[in-house]
Amino acid sequence: MKNIAIAVSLVIVLCFGVFGAVYMYQNIPVTYDGRGTDVYELQQDPYDYDVTDPAPDGAASIIVKENLAKTQAVNNVTAIVFDFRGYDTLGESFVLLIAITGATVILRKHRKRWGDGK
Image (cartoon, rainbow, N blue to C red; front, side, top):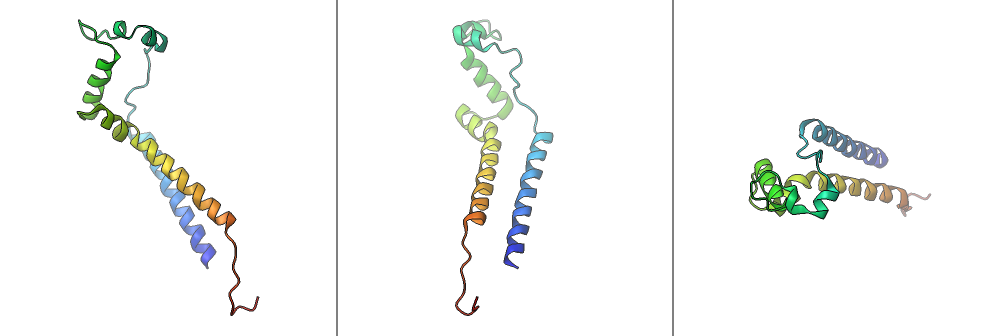
């Protein structure tokens, strides 16, 4: 009976994880796909890369303006950690939970009880 409960709970956790991943993939729009970004050019001369302002001030201005427009967060570090990386962290936590649960199931020892006589 205990093994069935463990198996059912693992299946439930796995189903919720798959459902969450599919939901995030289908319903959360891509905020920035990187098209049109020349990484080499950005690294070589970041001040010439900003073409949105008459007075370019580098890639930092692009990051500040796009984060504010997309997340409405004043602090860019908070916006990246909680808005962009939050789902990634949730996925990593789910993988860690499954790995710990699997290792516990595989490595646990069956203990004989005193009254069983087995």
